[in-house]
Length: 423
Image (cartoon, rainbow, N blue to C red; front, side, top):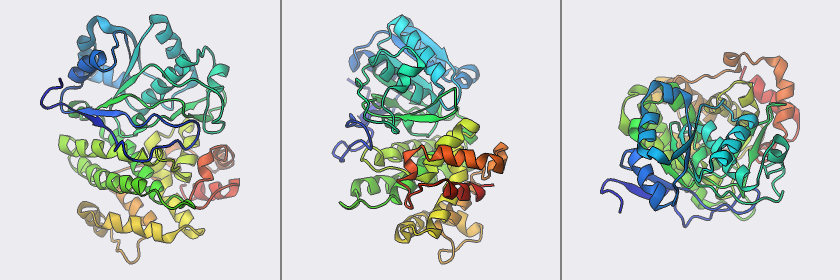
């Protein structure tokens, strides 16, 4: 029995039409657990739900050093903790994933628990996938299905992954994992039959330990998911209404929640509102709806030192302004604009910055929102200049999400034009 305050439910409506963008069918969204301390939920459900007794933990280095959350988890697991990895580089490098694969194999772990952000979560998903396929080296890892080559044969992930996220990047709700090749800094998006985590545990006491900038920037990543989903090209079979509904509800949680968190960083209710909106961000991916150029170009910006969410902060307004100037469905952009104006705290932000519904386009509204929460808005903030644009453009074309942009991008020049708008 779960405690009276503990809630365990599907992260998304199980009746929604889930399917994979690429690769084999996904297994569906994870369970969402909250309402009790994360240590209580994990210690109970590890045995009850997962029948596991040998936990391998991947924990954030900063969280481990600056808080007692890892110590709490270690105490709750006791002798069931058989392995521990503290810290991984941002953007999840293959060399480190292989280190963890070999370590989990050595200690015979039967469940992986993450305590930290998106890079750790992506690593854990690929570790489970790699173990199922007996991966031992870089070349074997790259032979697993990824969205540039999704039909390679592979065995589905087996070891369950349980995540205690400290950010809002939402990778814990999908079966995809972005991992960077150390040799060329190209990021591959591994895909089904890789599985999503089995359970995501939300804890407000963990959430408030996350630095404000990290919390907000990763929340913007989820906003980017919602916006690109709503603007995705309409399939010949018609729009997937459930994907649109999820994205709309996600924005209704994320935009007010992020603005309120900026005003009061220690407000657990505002952070929890953001958390509840986060699984709705990537829901479209689980229904076969691809993001667009903001994500596709962002995947290649990441290895140059730009954080997951920060890529969205820089690219999102420019991408939608470029789309608007090059034949995008403006009725869809107007729909998102109307939705943003209906949010009272967002409306106050727009009006305070001199915007009006009759003249401001979607790029303007997103720019105002990002500046209000203090996010970086320029590639120059990361010392990325014009000399890198052509290389970035060529690398970005390797990502299939440029082809699913509202205005499909198949040549380098449009990418360069978008990057020039982000100087």
